Image 1 (spheres, rainbow, N blue to C red):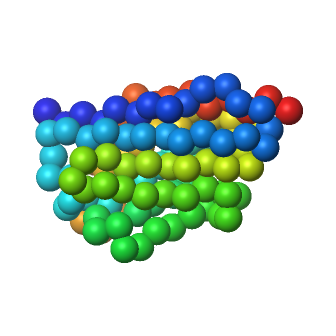
Image 2: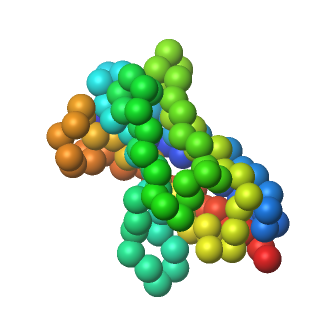
Length: 119
């Protein structure tokens, strides 16, 4: 079965950095667009970033543009999110998700990893 497992979350001070990883199994990773989403307490889940199946294209929410960098290693079936200059408003549970090609729907989701930024 398909599994997406996030790791790398934790507690960090404002201005600090974290690197999230999403390890995928049970799917042809290189065929999937991958994305990061987050959900803060009391708020709806929101899009953070996405990367095309080849890694050639990436997309960011305005709130993280210039601070976060998405990447993937298809040989390792793993996606990453490098988060720099973290702010308290980045505090959330971060989820990775997989979308087959450009179907427009994310079919698979991870269980999430908590990121907490102290001010």
